[in-house]
Length: 215
Image 1: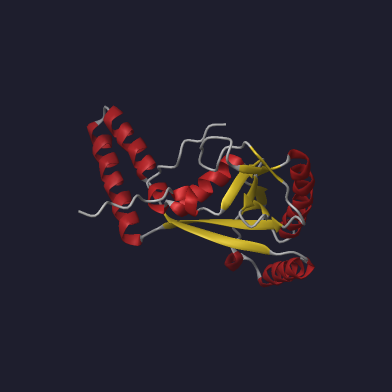
Image 2: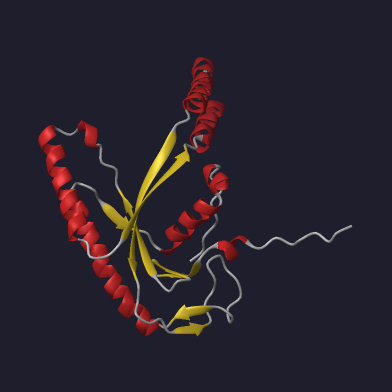
């Protein structure tokens, strides 16, 4: 019989060298910060407000002298934690009528979500900075763990210098989008890891099985 081929670990396909202090360094030596952006219901605004938002967004794009990436993440809405809370309330309910009504409500919500295919949406903006030179050292843990010693990371002094320049770009993006009514917040290291985990394991994240992240 042929010898089974051993599959590669998932992290070998992730083009990320290191995540530190909310900054992601990819294999192409670029540094990235990811901003989570709030939603804006454009359709409910008045005509004047829509025109003003459009003009502000146009000014934002025209003022950029660096690239940004806008990502929309859609996931099937996971309501199991909510339904489990209702089931616990049902079990604790002493009134038989309320117990029946809670059970019927759980069945209704589950059926409604399954037939309507409701999805949740998250909005992200990736701000990138490409350092002219990256000097690498050794001794940092990998993205999803691993033994130190063989992996590389950016030296602390250079990292802080480049991170400061990246942060200036982040502030520019946040300020410009704020004028349109869109609020942004940068993801920290743990949130970045969870975001990447969700992209490479979408089924697990929809089930609510995100990795346990320890500081």
